[in-house]
Image (cartoon, rainbow, N blue to C red; front, top):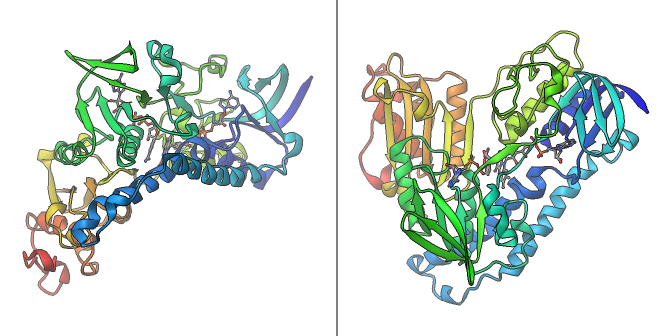
Amino acid sequence: MMDKVDVAIIGAGTAGLAALRDVRRKTDDFVLINKRPYGTTCARVGCMPSKTLIAAANAYHERTLLDTFGIRGAENLKADIPAVMARVRELRDHFVEGVLKSTEDLGERNIAGQARLDGPNRVVVDGRTIEARQIILAPGSSPVVPKPWQNFSDRILTTDTLFEERDLPARIGVIGLGAIGAEMAQALARLGIEVHGFDGADQMAGITDEKVARTLQDALSKEFAIRLGVEVNLAEADDGVKIEWGDDSVVVDKVLVAVGRRPNVQDLGLDSLGVPLDDKGMPEVDPNTMRIGDTPVLFAGDANGIRPILHEGSDEGHIAGLNATSDAPVRLDRRTPMTVTFCAPQVASVGKSASELDLEDVLTGEVDFSTQGRARTMQQNCGLLRIYASKNDGRLLGAEMAAPAAEHMAHLLALGIKQSLTVHDLLGMPFYHPTLEEGVRSALRQIARELPPCSISDLAGCGSLDVEALE
Ligand SMILES: Cc1cc2nc3c(=O)[nH]c(=O)nc-3n(C[C@H](O)[C@H](O)[C@H](O)COP(=O)(O)OP(=O)(O)OC[C@H]3O[C@@H](n4cnc5c(N)ncnc54)[C@H](O)[C@@H]3O)c2cc1C
Ligand SMILES: NC(=O)c1ccc[n+]([C@@H]2O[C@H](COP(=O)([O-])OP(=O)(O)OC[C@H]3O[C@@H](n4cnc5c(N)ncnc54)[C@H](O)[C@@H]3O)[C@@H](O)[C@H]2O)c1
C-alpha cells in the first residue's frame, strides 16, 4: 500500500509536536509517525520527573538548615522514598496525559510505529510506504549504556528506568556527572542515599570555567563522594556492583548510568538520502532552516545533536514546520545560548562560555555568593558567578555560574546579551535590595572598574559600599 501526503513528521516528542503545530496551520495533509511510547522524553522520563524528584529531595534537605534558623525537631523528619517515587510518577502521568491530549484529534494521521527513510521522499513504517513532499525527522535521543555494563541488567539504571523504581536502595553509584548525573546524584544524596559520583572529565555539569567548576565541586562534595578524571570499570560483587577506578573500588546496590544520550538515528535510513554522513552517521544540518543539504528532509530536536535541550528542540521543530510548508526558505536566527542545571547551587551558562573565549582577552567580573547578603539570610551563601565582557566596549559576551537562583540570573543576563547591552547599560537598571541579583551587580561593577568611567550624570557609575549587608 502506498500513501501520499504533503508532510510526514517522524517523532512525537517536543520537536515533532512543535513542527506539527506549524504544519497544521498550513495543511491537513500530513502524518505524524511515532515509535511507542508516546508522551515525549521531557514529560515521561526527562525534565519533568527529574525536576519533581529534585523538588522532593530539596524539600527534605531543608531540614539540615532548620536548626541554624532556630527551628528544632528536624531530626524527626523522614523521607518515605516509596511515597516520594509515587508522587514523581503521579505528576509525571499528569504531564504525559496533557501531552497525549494534544494529538488525540489526529485520527488516522497519527501512526504508531517505527519509521525508516527510504530515500528523500519516502518513509516506511510497518511495511507501509508513505510518499511525502517534505519529511521532518525528530526522533530524539536515548541514554547510552556502554555494552559491558548492560550485563549487570537490573543493577543498572538510566533515567528511562529510575523513575519507575518503587523504592531506592541504600547505595547508588552515578557514572557521568553531566547535567543528568549532577542533578540526580545530588537529589539521591539529599534523599538520604549513599551516592558515589564519577566522571571521566575534570569538570561537572558542562561547566567550562575552571573557577566556577571548582566552586561547584567543593559544594557538591559536601553532599556525596565525587571522583573526577577517572576511568571506571564495573565488576560483579556478592551484594551489588563493584565500581573500580585506579586501585580503588566501592560496592553499590545500583548504578545510574548518565554518560550521555545518543541520537536515535541507528535505523532511520539517513544513508538513503544521498548526502555525506560523518563518522557518527550524521548529515550536516543548517541550524537556521533545519534542512539537510538540498533534500526535502528537515531534522530537528535532540536527534540532530545541535543543542539537545528542550526550548531549542521546540524552536527547531518550529523552524522545520515553517520550512516544510513554505515555498521559499525561512531562515531564523537562533536564540542566545543558555543552559541551566538544576543542582544546588544551580549551574548556568549564557552566551559565550569560558571555553569559547580567550579569558586573557576579555574583561571578567565575579561575585562570590558565600558573602553575599541575601544569600546569607537564606543560608544559600555558596557559589560563584563570572561574567565576561568585551574589552573594547564593555559589551556583555557571556557568563558561567554555579550560584543560588542561577536560573533567574541566567535569564537576566541572556536578555542583556541578546540586546547587545554593555556593562554600563546593565548597571543603569534598578537592582532591588536585598536580592541575589545584587550579586550580578557586584560582578558588573568589577568589570566597570576596568572600563572608561561613564558620565557623572549616569547612575550606572554609582559604586559599591563594600558592606555585606548593603550589597
Ligand atoms: C533526565 C532528563 C532531564 C532533562 N532535563 C532537561 C531540562 O531540565 N531542561 C531542558 O531543557 N532539557 C532537559 N532534558 C532534555 C530534553 O528532555 C530533550 O532535549 C527533549 O525532550 C528532546 O525532545 P525531542 O523532541 O528531540 O525528542 P523526544 O521527546 O525523545 O521525542 C522523540 C520521539 O521520536 C520517537 N522515535 C524515535 N525514533 C523513531 C522512529 N524511527 N520512528 C518513529 N518515531 C521515532 C521516540 O519514540 C519519541 O517519541 C532532559 C532530558 C533528560 C533525559
Ligand atoms: N537541566 C538540563 O537542562 C538538563 C538536565 C538533564 C539532561 N539534559 C540534557 O540531556 C542530555 C544528556 O545529559 P547527560 O548528563 O547524560 O549527558 P552529558 O553529555 O551532559 O554528560 C555526560 C557526562 O558523562 C561523562 N562521561 C562520558 N562517558 C563516561 C564514562 N565512560 N565514565 C565516566 N564519565 C563519562 C562526560 O564526561 C560528561 O560529563 C544533555 O544534552 C543535556 O543537555 C539537560
